[in-house]
Length: 377
Ligand code: DGY
Image (cartoon, rainbow, N blue to C red; front, side):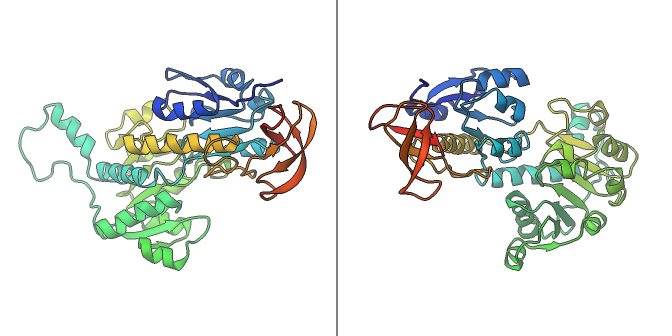
């Protein structure tokens, strides 16, 4: 018989005081030091787990799932979830969740910080000063590009994109253009002060372009040599989304050869490795994937992920209803039954088919008269 309390794997050290909340309902196996887990190590860690709290470092697909027969829930601590194979999770009816909303403003702040640092040559200036190269104030030192009154482009107009648009339009009087899979309702466009543009128009018109779209195989290297060639040579490119959106060699080449003025990057295709071609350039600001890294926001992300995980496992205050699911299955099935593990029982499915409806299920993880169980239809 499997354990009555769900077993949970926590892949990286997060905030202990928040993760400890899981211990009220679950047996928690938390990794104590920052660890680069191999795929085999992830599979081994999930072998007996009912749920996992993971970060973008851990990839979960069909192979890992095949090694994890009990797995029912994955809570990703992050809004982007390209580390998860959603089709494979859906096929296994595992619930996956992410952490949207709580990080929107913090990540938009970082996007704007990178934009300003790159366009106004902040880090380049500082290195130059620290190197003792500032001999005399001069009119032509570190001339950059204006932010205020310029044209800002946003590729990907979800919550973070809208946050950047608001900052640009309301804070800096920018003319804001955006391109997105679907156009925003006009009322939202008015509110954030942005106008829809075609992809090529966006590239050609903007003085600064910020990438905020979720990564998928379909938009791999959406900013490649051809896209860069359509941009103004005076333009700035900022990427706070995922490294795979940009052909980094083409970007480094454009920056090195005066076909793009500056870039600000928080994400990299092979992170934590950063290409030497980028490291060698003075006109690119590089940060180590810190978009959501304020203390308050990182705590809020872990809190939401813990809430999601408990709920997806059918325990805690939101049992059965994780706040922010990303898989097709969005609710867990809690069957109240009285059978032994593995036995077929008649129970009450409390959520998937509607609260209070009766259905037949198979108890998969707990037994004993009068006890609550999580089961499969
Ligand atoms: C996210 O949330 O997707 C970030 O990239 C990780 O902080």
